Amino acid sequence: MMIQNKEQNIEYLKQHAKTLIPSELSVCELILDNKNISAISAITGKSVSNITSTHCHIRNKLNLKKENLREALPRITKQKK
Image (cartoon, rainbow, N blue to C red; front, side, top):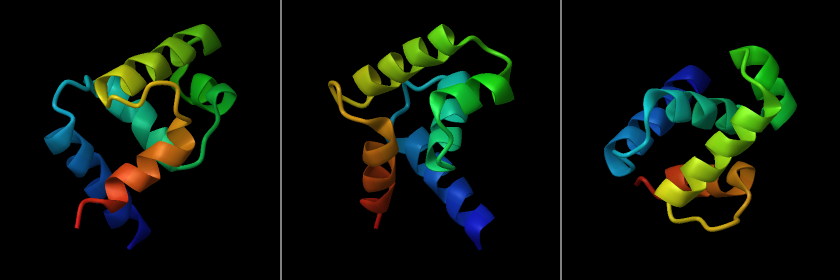
């Protein structure tokens, strides 16, 4: 059930934030899995600065300004129903 919920969250983001590219969606998935920037960096093999930059791109594309993605993404995906 938890895996299905994660998949539904990513599908929701794909449908409602069509400008997110696959790497940004992957980072969103990891954020929704409560991973921090360091953990995401280790998992993806990308630098911390690259992940930080990706966070900024996600925020811009979702019109979130400087909002914390770990708080905003769950809220956004809960609005799906």
